[in-house]
Image 1 (tube, rainbow, N blue to C red):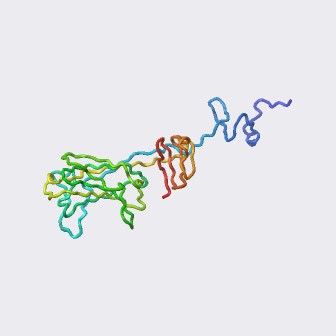
Image 2 (cartoon, one colour):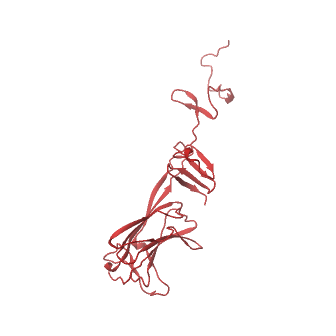
Image 3 (cartoon, rainbow, N blue to C red):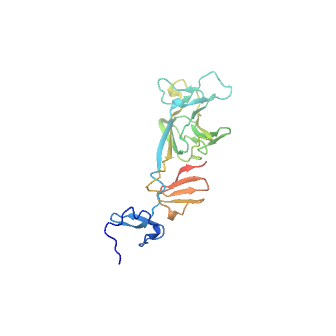
Length: 266
């Protein structure tokens, strides 16, 4: 029997050894060699398609000073109908609703963010109801309500109140094709000459949205991906699973309770 001398096999002499010469040593199909802490041994190849994506909450708001008046056609165009007082400028209202009863403000949110909540801070001690709606408007077309229908206050109270709208239509912000604006419709009688005369008031509006995190190539919790028009069956899902939705051209990640869109091709 021919024996190889100790130390005779060097890196240089085995640098061109074919992989076909390596023994199977119990390896199964698609397994790779992994260091187990003691030695190299066959093990499953965990596919990693991302790092820590997830989502992050974001907030934006409208201050009373952001609003402008919407005048009715040919009605006192030379007068200021927007009411913000030096002695009490924490809210915005209108002077005479019979002549100008709406105010408008632009809404600027990040592209591809998902709007999840709108909270309105207001006061209403009038017999009529205050109403608010959020619209997106195409650059060459009409407006669409993101609320479905206007939110309206109910009852009468001299305290500042808040209302949160969480049912949002077309909530994915698309700044490529739309602009966004919020419109308030006042419905009270009389003229506002002093802060106490304003029976309807807006103190501010808060927008809560989510933004997808970045998918980073490398080791992480995202172990595999699924491609198809329909979502993978519920029993096959786990947190971090990536679904490439070929029906809507979106990349989604399973959060444990829903699919979070992290990229799209709209």
